[in-house]
Amino acid sequence: MATMADVARSAGVSVATVSHVLNGTRPVLPHTRQAVLDAVEELGYTTNTLARSLVTARTRSIGLAVSAISNPYFTEILQGVEAAALDAGYSLLIADPHDDPEHERKVVRLLHERRVDGMIVAPSADPRGLLDYLGRHDVPAVFLDRLVNAPGEDGGRLFDQVCADNAEPTSRLVTHLAGLGHRRIGLVAGRPGLSTTSERITGYRSGLAFAGLAYDERLLVHGDSESAGAEQATEALLSLGVPPTALVTGNNAMTIGVLRALSAHGLSVPDDIALCCFDDFPWADLFSPRLTAIAQPAKDIGARAVRVLLERLAEPHRPVRTVRLPCTFVHRTSCGCPSPSEEGTPS
Picture 1 (spheres, rainbow, N blue to C red):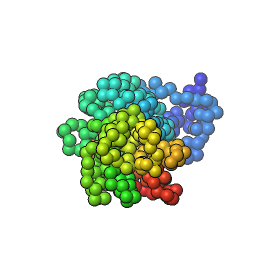
Picture 2 (picture 1 turned 30 degrees about the horizontal axis):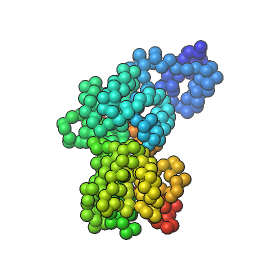
Picture 3 (picture 1 turned 90 degrees about the horizontal axis):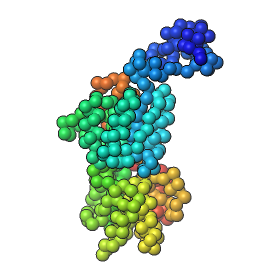
Picture 4 (picture 1 turned 90 degrees about the vertical axis):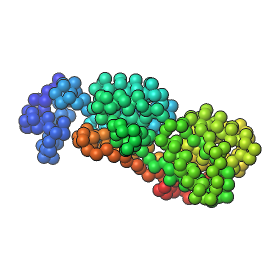
């Protein structure tokens, strides 16, 4: 097996220079760097990650805790995290907390025991145990998608956070439907306790106010961020004496449940009821009708979370920040428009 000394001899440089090239610890002239990389390739040299971690106290690994199995939106975020981590020379350890606070704390502890350099976490609706663990063990972490412990709240430790804008895009869906003549617009919201849920409710209510429509609490139901919950919530809306003529769904999993409930009642979208969705689908253009949706920059959120974490690792005492990325309004036909634009415009 080739050693670092073998690579140095082949490239005609010192062992220290090889180390700087492989670990990125000091700038190296481009032709020298290329000579080292060519020698690495020719000799089949691989770094001893374990030995390096004993010296540097870093494993060049990131822990990722997101519910990617139960939530397809997080699958795209995972792709963004993985690509950015790999590009930076970091490996990724993944755990699924299943949106359960107790399981969340358990998987975060297991990732920490694997000595990851830092973590990226999509918190549950009750992140108290998570915050307590990360704070007590001084774990560098970035929260993505869902905000917790915003600056000034609770007096606890603050964390970097990366998410999409939620309120304004939801308001835009509501005002779009109101502009089409709808006066009873329902919202199938996500799980209570999540910042994404509360912010989208805020956007829903502001959209109604902007359109001059009164808020009716009976038109706001919670689908628990899941398909089955959304199906039950839609049943409740349809059972009202005066049901809504249009619906906004709070995420892509709930959109499936809403469509299932509407189909069971023999209702056609958009002829009988209009529909707009928060979260776009890769296959949304194949639905009949094609779904008008808010598209989140999921891969960009994942990649940005990696960059923010690496900046935190490089500068542990830098100011905490929250990064919000803009969404895109994708105008199709489920809203009832006869000939919508094919191109998304920033929200």
